[in-house]
Amino acid sequence: MKKRTMIRASVAAALLGAGAVAMAQDNVFKIGLILPMTGQQATTGRQIEAAARLYMAQNGDSVAGKKIQLILKDDTSLPDVTRRLAQELVVNDKVNVLAGFGITPSAMATAPIATQSKTPEVVMAAATSSITEASPYIVRTSFTLPQVSVALADWAPKNGIKKVVTLVTDYGPGIDAEKYFKERLQFNGGQVTDSLRVPLRSPDFAPFLQKVRDSKPDALFVFVPSGAGAAVMKQFLERGMDKAGIRLIATGDVTDDDQLNDMGDGALGVVTSHHYSAAHPSAANKKFVEAFSKANKGLRPNFMAVGGYDGMRVIYEALKKTGGKGGGEALLAAMKGQIFESPRGPVFIDAQTRDIVQNVYLRKVEHKDGQLYNVEFDVIKDVKDPGKAK
Ligand code: DHB
Image (cartoon, rainbow, N blue to C red; front, side, top):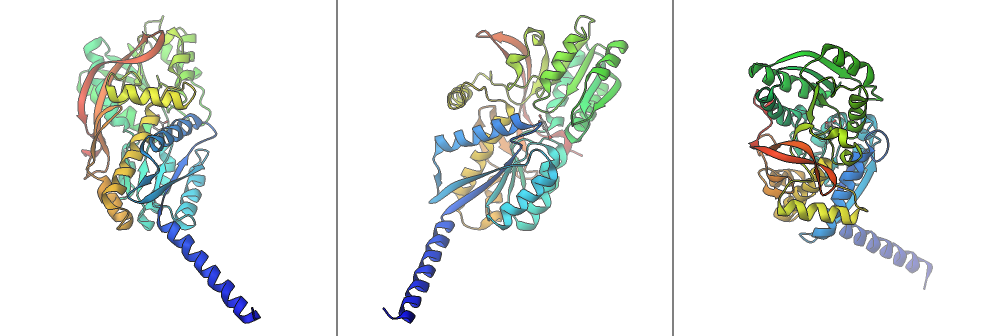
């Protein structure tokens, strides 16, 4: 072969190769999954990753002729890192969807990127009410703190709890929980006598709990993010708060299924309100818990896992509906209005707010099959985020 012919042939081969790559790329649907895999929120990352992989194992990795590629990134729960990773995933990897977001600041940091690039942002964990208002491209499959806190403020005064001190982590979801619990309790004739806030990073609950013990309310209402509940429970019991006649009531983030079984019998009787319990008595949930546990060395799924599992479902169904055509706008449209049975119960993605509408359950920690579980004893059906009503 002459030199020129050789060059031409190799250029042609290179072009052909590039074409094949481009074609292969066209047939790939990329989900950029940004989670805290290390650091303070690592259990959230572990739960959501496991749930996303379970969903893919059960439903296949090819949808509407596209191969699903999950690109997992660890943001260590630092919002500056989340922002950089989201930018790289959109610009370099050209992901079709951004998903995950372990804490509110991470979901918020990504919102402008979702808007500018018209990429759907599926929030699977973070739960401050206002998140869905930060970008029209955000869809949420987790929950909101107002959604779950109000139910407990309705239950408490009917059960002898009138005077309450609130203790929350000092950022978006905690401030939401504090506000909506307090407003509703007061509406019901109860009273919040003190509102305490602990820092998100390296919280020490001891000085706050001592203060509560001294003021002797009927109950202490707590919100802390997933992963911090065991420390609250331990210090509550160590200080003999329960023996002093102060009841612990909380959002389900505190009696987190990821940690509950290790909290010990001191947790028995704690009443919480939340959207998911691993003990939810439905066939769909039994199947989910068994499969999740089997795939993850006996790990019990928590509410983060269910947010991740349902988030994948919302993405898969949107892709099925659009056949991968029409880009981010079409995908987003196909995410809105989805109705399905989640392991948590029936859910609905409100087309107007892009937020999840779901049942909220009142639960009590009890023994079941020799383990500790949040056993549901009441349900408020189809709860919309009250934070959106204003
Ligand atoms: C958030 C994080 C959590 O771990 C949780 O349980 C609830 C809310 C958040 O940052 O929005």
